[in-house]
Length: 319
Image (cartoon, rainbow, N blue to C red; front, top):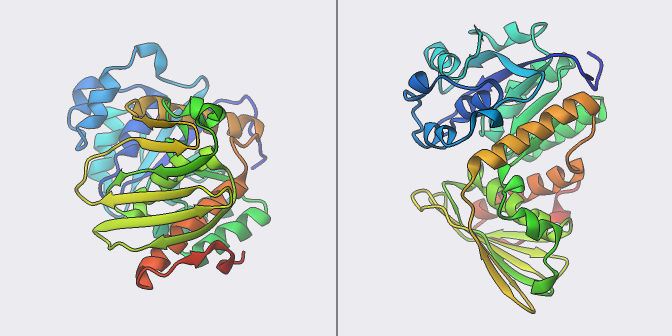
């Protein structure tokens, strides 16, 4: 398959699901629109809640639709049928390989990084471009696999929607009024394996490349990650399986800001807009090297926890 795809009508397949992740419902609805009655059966009540608040004209991306869905692993065909009905997807398949030859691109809408090589390999081997939900990986060997695939011409993107948080965007562009950033606190619910990347990627555009070390002194149930950046700024990420979400505390030498976020639709939709733009033009929304550095922080954060909170330099992971 040639890449980029240009202005053709895009048929996109979506893969799902994993426990606690409703992206096949929400992302498909953002591209296809949704059936309000069927969407009430979505097992994630927050999704129909925020979808129902959006004006109709915000749904859809011209010339791009989710046309096929397959759920394997945590969910099965019955769940795929429910998603298809709720999000106007015309084709449900039991075997993900049945999408090959039928779609122009695939979204892997699962957040279990250790499953992504297995889920994505058939499509990348077939030359199909992909968006892969965060985190891309959580193991060193899997990151090496994806780097090798990219080196050999595979096309894929991965990111957290937190990179596109509406409330944070002005500070990504400019935060000079705060002076030099010296400390950032970014709480995040759930576990580091899946939601740690949300915290990491929310912070990353504030500081840019140059993280030096990661130390995880927490547990599986309660994460406590400490990061050092070459700028001198330190970052703390606190997580708990049962904690509520919270905003971002940014402290500089001249000022402090607490930034809350509340528009999930905006962040997810912008993520999808940029994915489709990339499919058409080949223009990546941000350098892939940023994804690599972020995945190092995910991998080494887990390694630090396993090694009783050892402080690990990013230079220890030589890729």
